[in-house]
Amino acid sequence: MKAVQYREVGKGPQVVEVDVPEPGPGQIRLKVTAAGLCHSDWFVMDLPAEQYSYGLPLTLGHEGVGVVDKLGAGVEGIEVGGSYAVYGPWGCGLCHACATGRENYCPNAAELGIAPPGLGAPGAMAEYMIVDDKRHLIPLGDLDPVQTVSLTDAGLTPYHAVKNALPKLRPGSTVLVIGVGGLGHVGIQIIRALSQARVIAADLGEDKLALAREVGAHETLISGADTADRVREMTGGRGVDAVFDFVGAGPTLETARAAVAVDGHIEIVGIGGGTLTAGFFATPFGATVRAPYWGSRSELMEVLDLARAGAISVHVETFGIDDAVTAYGKLHDGTVRGRAVIVP
Image 1 (cartoon, rainbow, N blue to C red):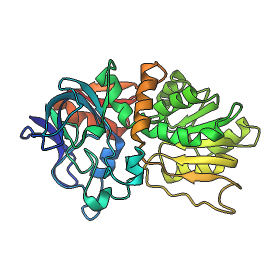
Image 2: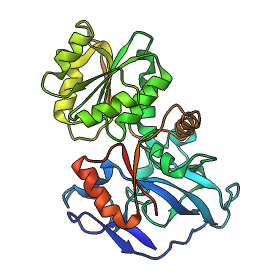
Image 3: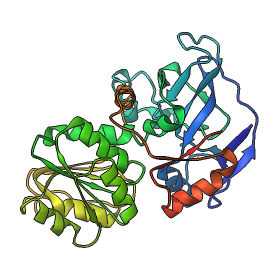
Image 4: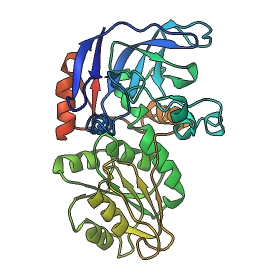
């Protein structure tokens, strides 16, 4: 079968031929119908050799959906031929976090060698993939797999962040969304679906701001050194009740710090490598700062229900598996509008 793999540190992705995997006891094999690309893939592939710890070769793709093709021994309750989304942040399944469906915060996964697909385990960017346990499959029902696949991360991650900040998103509140890429444009829709907050979106390009307005932002700004000052002007000097930074670089975190109101909230969603100093004389009184990771299994169910209700959708650009290297190049260059999806 064809697969998109990272095979040599510093060399980028390749399309290769590998054997079709066989499911072991308790495992499920999917015939992949769609796999999403993510900036996290480039974060991994850009790591220097001394920091890279994901194994080689690595089949990429932590966003995946597919049709069940074969069941391993002992698997029950999963329909062969059924369409499922893959919940990516796999945990041990036994700890308190996993028992509540919050496997994204499993404290034992790393020690046990458990890794998400595409981020250690073989991922979805192939014609077939193995899912380790049936609890990591969420039925798609009548949702279109190509339009849905990115919701497993680009929907789940912002949903998890927005849900945590909901107490701040009361009627009359204002939020700032920094970065209107694959996650940010879904994040805006989630904010609008779950609250009555006013949304200000900031990005470097007018094309991204046009997308922001298209998906529900009330106001938009070209990002720059004066973004926080302009946001404070738009809020009567008070600042915003919540900031969702989908970039996470040093300059955007500084914008978040300078724009957030007293008793406000900052969610650092992007993995741009920046850090934010918090505390007295660094952030406004009462302001909280959080770096969320992915989301829970129940939250993925809720995200898919929002999609079924028509409340959220993903703007996707599709590629065949043979064009995966080109797709990753566009992602790296920032020229993908919304989310790139491989359709094997």
